[in-house]
Image (cartoon, rainbow, N blue to C red; front, side, top):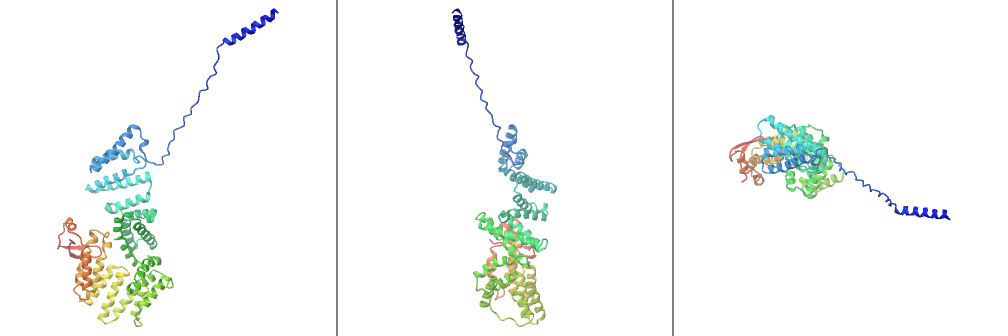
Length: 477
């Protein structure tokens, strides 16, 4: 009994001890917060941007970007240049998207170039401009666009410090990349360089075909884009005429070119014999198949509306046949043979003039055309026809002797008007000559143009290019 009581007390004491022992609180598991690594935007621009600079340096460079712009707007070029250098060399890519820092640097160096008299320093400024363009390519790519800009600057601003072949290659790079979407300012200077190289046989006909086709496509695309309308008006006053002049290079343009150009003209003037005959000969000259639908259509119109009895067998008939079939060079030789063989002065004059017109309208060789027109004038001094043609040659030379607008393209009107005045003395050509006088008088330079060049109205002036005529200065106003 006693043992039971002891056991009960031990159990109670144990329970009391347990109840009085402090409770042990289970440790709270601390939540582990995992901080993700900062997301770093991959920068594909190899040039330094503002984000890569330390805070202090970035503040200085950003301030330089703002301040140089302000100075440049006020044309404080020296002050702008120092700040531009800090901005450009500190972070050439700026925020990674803007590009005006390159344009502004080029503008500053262009100013230094124009105000510099030391030729070696001028070259240094040109080198700096080209280096900025190269840096832009390094930072942002756009090789074709930059090549076009480089070529344009070298052509118009730094011609004395650039090789023409280098400029031509840069323009080619631009148009190769952009094709018909090439920037509008590439078209005129590239067309000039290209046409000169084709005429002088400095490039192959294959290369000539490739780039004349690209220019024609660019003209269509740009003109119909609805953008830069004023610029495209200037381009269309020059480039198409330059390309037309290349039709005298046999084999340059293919049948598709002549069909597209002359069939549209023919269909708009389906009974005009001059246009019908020209279209027919051009199609054959361009290598179109005689049995093609286009040639057959024009041949039918020629038979219906323009039939003339052929000359009797002999050199004259052969000459006409060669001309009709687009064999222009052969026809010239055959007409020459006929002129040499005939003793009839009227026929000598007539066919010498015809050869002059073939060189003008078909072979597109203006010096040769003038040479034959002068021969015809010696044969018949009272005729105004040779002078009318020479006047047309000169008046058509605006795109050949200049950019299509401006001084070099305007001064050709002076010798043209001289020729039209001579043609006006012949009653048979007087009316047409007056029409041309009225038309081209408005295209002469203005008083302001001659004043800027210290030239006086009424003074003598020698027109260059292929014309090389001394004429009298006149103004349109």
